[in-house]
Length: 161
Figure (cartoon, helix red, strand yellow):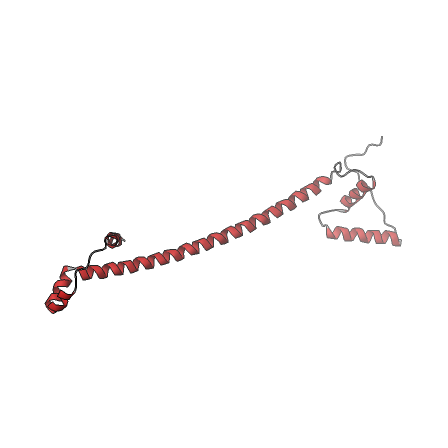
């Protein structure tokens, strides 16, 4: 059996004929499309194919598997980015809805505070005395209003608020 040294360099000669020139043009075109490959890689692939060696045995098949894995990783990264985008959009919408609800609640609380303040002014003894001194018939015409227990409890919280 013939033994080669670790690194063997063989040359390929292209003659000035039409067939060789067109083959050389095809090789150059193919190498331009795949800049990571060399002429040596292309020759080895051609030899593997012409010798009918199965893909699983070829050393170049590992690079094809690596490329396939890289494609799958790229696809997964795109899917994750899409999921993140949808998730953040959904959370942003939820945050905006919560802010709207908080605004509505704060408006309702301020309206309740106004109502409680109005009722406390009407029920304040100083106010009734000043009304009596100004117009006794008007003060007598106003019936005493009952205090709503819910509003009285809320007024305690509003004072703290």
